[in-house]
Amino acid sequence: MQVVRTVEALRTARKELRGSVGFVPTMGALHKGHLSLIQRAKAENEHLIVSIFVNPTQFLQGEDLDAYPRKELADTTICLRAGVDILFMPSIDEMYERDELSIGAPAIRGYILEGEKRPGHFDGMLQIVMKLLNLSRATRAYFGKKDAQQLALVTQMVKNYFMDVEIVPCEIVRDERGLALSSRNSYLSEAGKTKALCLSKSLKEATRLIRQNELNVTTIKSSMHIVLQEAERVEYIAIVDQEFRPLSSIERGNTMILVAVWIEKTRLIDNLWL
Ligand code: PAF
Image (tube, rainbow, N blue to C red; front, side, top):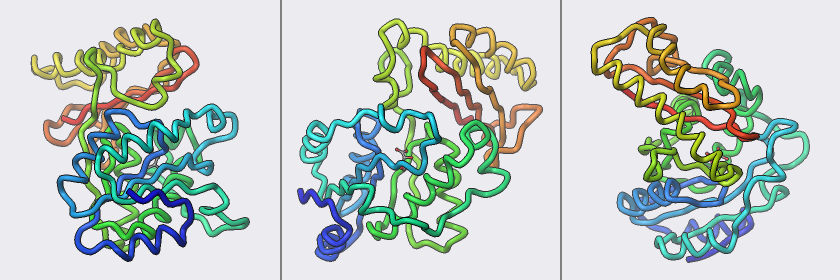
């Protein structure tokens, strides 16, 4: 595995790769969720590039940029064991210059739900993903469904900018109790982790109701709210179609249920695709 820290070194290493290239962009603190993306990318491509970069432009003022977990040594070992060919770990200066051209998230889909609660987050996310996709020149890039809006917006960017890469959506990975894996789970105490199960429990409650043929969105949201009472604060429960348009009634095969809550001082999201 080559560990490269500069754009120039990445370009040189990338030139050596012939055949299909899978790419997994991450912010590090790798967990089993990342590993599942890495393993899938490894299985579906001849070569594999992983990036680790805590991207400052996607953090809002007052968010956890400085506190974000950084585990370079452990992450490098995980990548080495997983058969990564190139691990790209650039500095901020390597990725950005002053007074940059920026990319704007779309006015509607980029400014609802996560985009509404974290205005500007998606601009920064798209900006770095564009840079990383251009540098990796990947055949396929792998994104988790947990960040459903991120996945949708990256897919849209690739379409709108005619970029030559396939975006591969990957299933959410959960721990044995149902908590969706996230680097931010490490901020939670044990009691917090137990409380955080209310996210997946609320989605299970929605599934239970839908199985019983309850398709009314208001009714489903009310039941989910009861389960989410464990959280310090519920930011949103959204039931939307795959274009992120609010639904009044569940459409099987075309519905996403998304939740965002605060547990202790940590903001957590989860979702379910029906
Ligand atoms: O999902 C993440 O970890 C980040 O948003 C990404 C895609 C690596 C861009 O910084």
